[in-house]
Length: 312
Image (tube, rainbow, N blue to C red):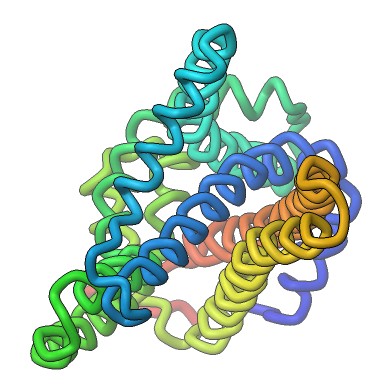
């Protein structure tokens, strides 16, 4: 396998498919980045309210609930539209990123095999594998690195540093297990979407393919680095957006009107959100393309059993 060619071809394909980036990269990234910003902002508030900053009686959850309740009481006419908007956003957040991933893999694989495939084609075939892919992501999400970080922050914030130190070896072990699972199940999505296999059959097939293709560890390592860069960029942007909003709003509010500060902070936040979402969308489609090309190449290779005679 020509690793350099796979990566170069994937980048060329990504840059020449702007519609794919917009529909299945940028839009789902807006959803995930927005939720990420909100969650990180809550974590910052929770740490600020914890014993670490001397506010042992504070409660971030109480403050959030109180703010929402007070807002509802003051703006009763906005309650129904906001609830409807929140429900619609929640449904799209839980469903569309997975569907976009399935549709992207379908389109990329069909284009690689010289087939005609539009956005509608990707959606049509993506829906057929959506439930299995959603089930797999729900299973694996518990062991993701980001989930482990959140669990670690919860322990250190609520149970104290002593217990956190005791549990630190357990968390390190879980991180190693998480990395091993991520490596072994690298191709699970593709067995589900392209080959139409079930969840556990796909996980088994992925682990087998990774073991049989151990010579391609260099490529897998490069891809892991790409994913790591994506996560790092996303993490930086997720931390930067609430920080920019809070910083600009606070500064402007001290020198002018609070409403003006809020407006400027919101505009800057939206610009950062769209930029971060587009960047993450491009990296997502690029990663899907590299993995799809790799999967198609590896699964097309013939692995001989010990009983078969090699042909010269």
